[in-house]
Length: 202
Image 1 (tube, rainbow, N blue to C red):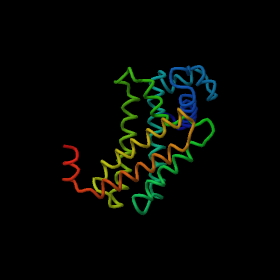
Image 2 (cartoon, rainbow, N blue to C red):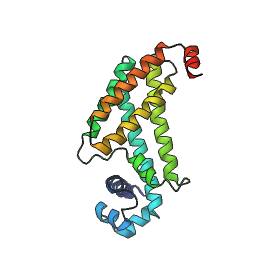
Image 3 (tube, rainbow, N blue to C red):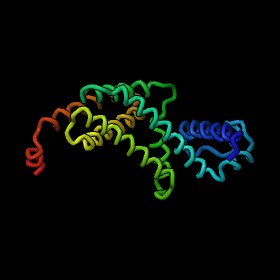
Image 4 (cartoon, one colour):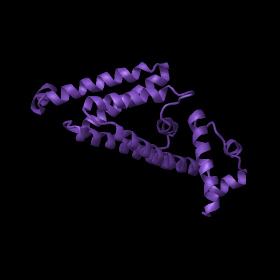
């Protein structure tokens, strides 16, 4: 792609993501994307041959931005495991307080594609969520948490659940409730020997 065309491509990607996130993938047309991003429909199709291809490119671009943002945020998550959890869910509460907040764009768009398991956008979303979970696992490992990556999976589950319930109820306190559950989980898992946990499960 010519260098002069790159700003147009980036404008399309940013505008399309905003529309997809606010209104959903199926409710946005290529005509609306062209109008919102200030390009002709011909120019839009010169960059992206279909809406499916555009969605895939949108999520690839957002994946890179989100990972960079989470790594920067992760640099601030230092100290004890409890401090890491508090920081994670405090940031979630702040994020959810933005006007017209719509939760995770990746989650929302993949739900729309639930009947298309082979869609490339779903593969990107899976990779995105797995990378964020893995990064949280590394933070917990550095903080001395036992079985850190498994704990990260449990905490990530609480985070995704909090996001869903905040969307349903419009209640930011779910972030604080999820944080307390995550800290309780860390205390229990770090204090109970593994053989004892096996005995309880039996």
